[in-house]
Length: 155
Image (tube, rainbow, N blue to C red; front, side):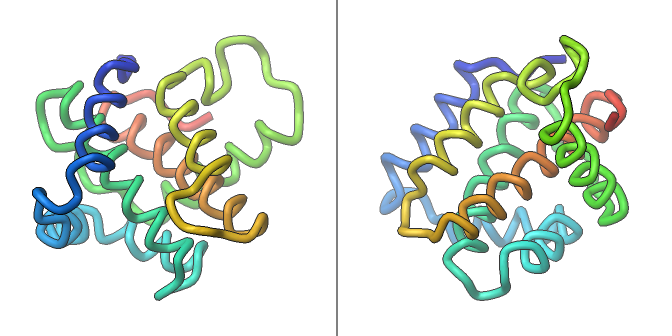
């Protein structure tokens, strides 16, 4: 199943345009309770209490909402072992040529575009290294949620 671009745009527009209206802390708390493996993974990869972690957590919440909206159900919990496998798959994919239809951009193009936008222009200043870490972490989150929500295995 494909997360449509309109779903991603709607969710991202909602979190980026109305941060004062929406109680973000409750959304992040809900996400942390539902997806503790993702939160721990982001802290490990992006640095706990860092701007990179904040950006990755913010957009991971949006990505999870997009899967929820598309599926109609909250995605199942993602285990840390799946995230590690997803990260390895993404790094392998980005360092080699993959067959058409096998890459993240082919499987979830709207989410891949979102990740590219975040890496290219994060909402807070990040170093190139931090932006790369955020991008890789978000790609792993997409791959992992794709497997748990839609049953499409991480390559």
